[in-house]
Image (cartoon, rainbow, N blue to C red; front, top):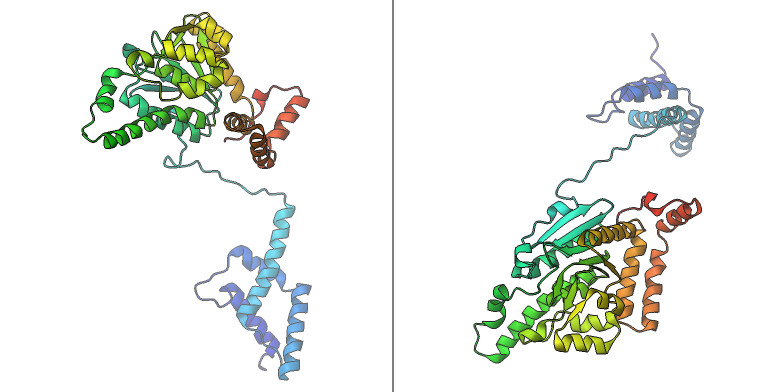
Length: 389
């Protein structure tokens, strides 16, 4: 028998290379790919490319082109797989997307992560958290643990993408009796230093740490609603002054108590209360005399915005307000709080400039289209699903 022609030898080599992965070590072709190679044998595009390559080699070398088996197999596989892809797309098949939940290490902080000695944190339906001062036997006096745990709690809430509003209240018969003198006196009054300057530096560090306990309420981008019942004394006024909204019950009363214990209020009342009440004369009177301000006077002066007859009605109203706020776009609500706090401490021109810089990016949110569409369709915003923030 005559020796096979060069073209036949090349075809046989191509067939063997296609079956064993094109001659590549350790590579085996799948059944689907081999089927594609069989279909590709008569592919016009492949024949045209092969012929053009052979003619180019003849012009350069003066001899016939003999492509390696691996190159032939790869070219045939490419053409065959393109055909398989066309058939797959024509069949209407849809890719499967598998969503895997975050591991426990990556999970965002939620209410179950809040374990405190002086606070109790409870999730409420509708992206709301209820933070409760939880020392009812001590009338919710502010102990060492309280000053530390408030910072930890609200830093976590700031990072909690599920939470959109917070209600802050007190357990037991009153909101808070203020600083726990028996627990705090040792740290404040009994410094183990003889040098006045060094004692002063220590006390300054303690005071600034205590100030941060209430600063975190303003820094938290989620609106904080204070629900006050019974007495709100001393540090309690500092606390509620840093909240965004204040409701109280009819039995609530407020007292800037610090002058009665020989000191000036130093964690926020003297700085924030004048901006809330709007009457410097009234603030001076309250701070100089430590007299009680009852619920009706607090309402008329602007310290609180609503008064309820009972604590139960107060909590229902505060939680309903928080739920309503949480139904809005979190981008809009949190951006509003950030700009309100900034504008309070800056001029109108500075506030407008900050607002323009803020909204140059925030106006690109999808929440605008979702909110407008709900309004046009006369749907309530609580039916709109906004993304976490």
